[in-house]
Image (cartoon, rainbow, N blue to C red; front, side, top):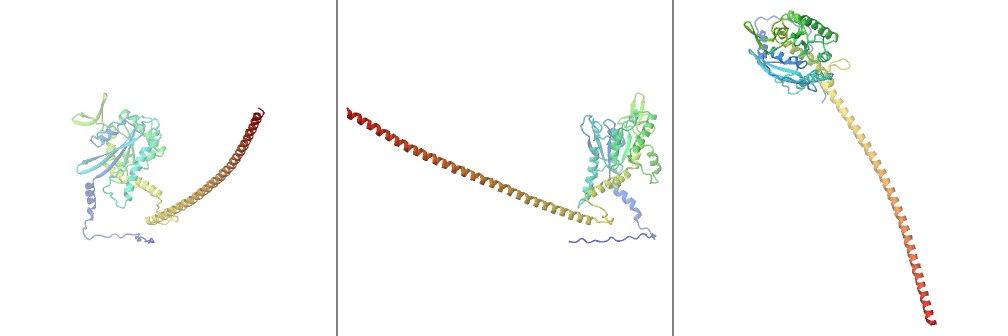
Length: 419
């Protein structure tokens, strides 16, 4: 069946703007969209990367003001493992399906060369699962649980000396796959002066190594000023805690030390509030959108190109999906036919080689048979001659024996007569 090329209708370059003579009602579309979104709920997936003991689980509990009841991770795992846990959260009438993915054993190995590989493979696996669902004939994207990671919180050890090589390598491998927000964990362990120098050092190293971290968008006028200010605070220096301390008339999340109390939600103590504001309250939807429009699109484009699909041909003309499929199908059938011909030729060649081997073996068997037959004939002839010789010897022996007997008898008779 021949494919029919149908040219798409040409759109006019200029659109006419018309005035309405009365109220129509499509101005309620934003409200419809909000109601539909609230009804379906939202999905948000967070990847936490950092060495064991940097307070990843504690910070998650603090961010969402709950207890996820995560178990502590050991320090002696031979490889990095990723564990994802999904939770249903609800605030007012908004439902959120939250997935927190933790890197268990990250940075604990002596050889840290491939520590990032498990993370990269996991992110690609989520993209691949979504792509396969998207390519199905009967798709159910509405009911599909989207496990693509929307943000990566990269926990930096508060050394005060800069980033480790494993941090730079891992973030460089991930910056085209996920939105990266670097944060300094346990920021209460270094002074404010050291903290500012540490932040500057981290940003310098990231820029020098070409690592692209997530920048809060400034194209929206309603949040551009806030986001622009918050971009200058990256990386956020955070403190997490599951303990509550009563200070004055308020009970707050805090960490208590012999020298004083560090309040988690006090902006003069750490950047926890800034992180929560940017991550959850202001830019969560932008991260979800950027994950789909940028990171997933890059993966999807690369995978479809690997499958042989393209938008334009060699002459830079548009190519439809059907044309590409037909070309791939024809190429595949031609390849199968070529392989079939090669296998047939190989089979014929092997049959000929086997026939030659069998003929050679048959010739050897005939030669061996002829030799055995000749040897048998010669042996039979030799035995006949030997038998004949033995018979002749036997006859000769009997003849001589008879002569001897006759001679002895004659002598005996002669003696008897003399007497």
